[in-house]
Length: 263
Image (tube, rainbow, N blue to C red; front, side, top):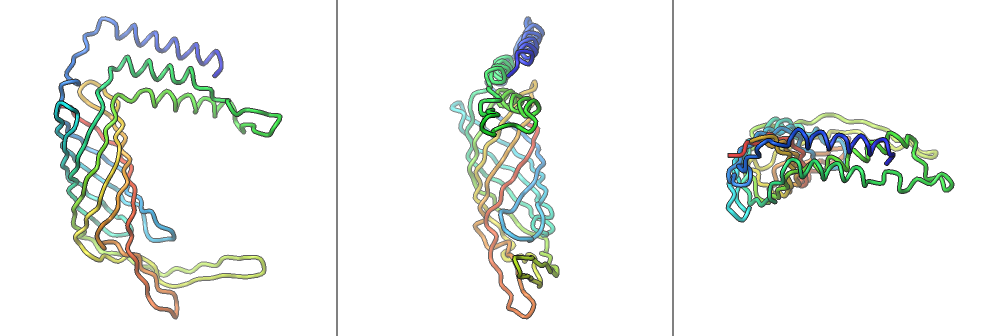
């Protein structure tokens, strides 16, 4: 990291600390045991081929924590247009645990320290061809990433189940494509899409939430991995002149952004 960037980051840290000096830091975030959050994001199927679209997720959650930072959560969510299926309503139920909440000045200082100590050009070696196409821009992005990781006030881990009900219908469409090889032409045409099997849907979930506190609120990033235990989403394929085949779609990932209120 260049000396100029380090000087700017150090000056920024000094200004923030001076601004925060003298302000009373309320300890409410250490004693807060309840959390209400509203989130929006995307549900992404892990599947090969053209079998529909990513879904949009809207979710509300309530979580209660005990003194040991373990607790439980319950919520309600709606998934729209997932795999070209109109809608799914679910009730996430989970076991949750979290780390302690770190103070703003502590995490900001950690973020600046990470960026200053981050060696953005550790692998830069023009004599052996390991050059960056845009070294300055890539170095700045690497420093920003290290800085943002240091800003996380709290990490939270979730594992649970989400029972739900699929009220939408699947969609199918005619598909045709050709792949040109070396002297050969490979083609496929037929009907592909998604069918709804069991309208009752049950998934096993595991994820992490990274939060940044602003007063009584937290801005959070929540990636999760899901395994659909029921035969609810079926991938349909029927080539021209062939027989139809279906198989369950099991794995999916979600990425959500949420606003949390600590009570």
